Length: 199
Image (cartoon, rainbow, N blue to C red; front, top):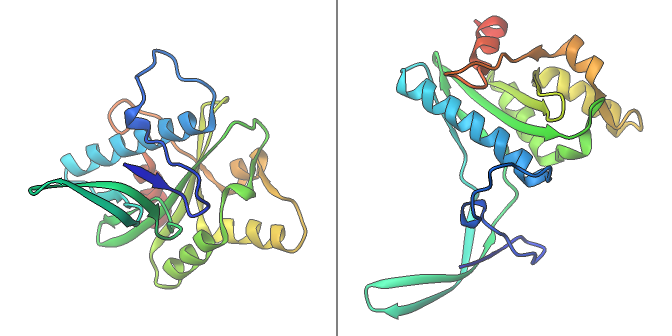
């Protein structure tokens, strides 16, 4: 099946690639690593009846289907229908949770170009409805993970839009964010931070 981005660029599924013993330092592999850790964490939360949080599916528009057999359809071409909002959403202790997960190879700062305006707009809408919304940022080379509440992210974004710094420094994340502990069972235990900040 051929899935393309709106720009026409081909999409390659990571699941079709052969497993490797060692991950390369490409952006896609780093992203999949964080995504995998969060997905496993969410599975742990769900199986222990702690929270119900899932990765959002990306809407796809099918444009070409072939029917080689009467009982089977094969999708030959599809496009991502629209830009996704944030990566994850769900419910925890009766509160709506919505967050984005980002990763950087930079050691000193997180570039705000990795966040998109439609994601900020969506998070602002969630925030206005008293939902819990935040971003999880991993510094790959340092193996550090930070939780940044959306209210702080909005201030950094405003500074960026007004011509100020184009990134959030690691020092600012240490000051305004929360370090997320890495554990064996809940690999990226972000709910421990949610408990501390919201409950």
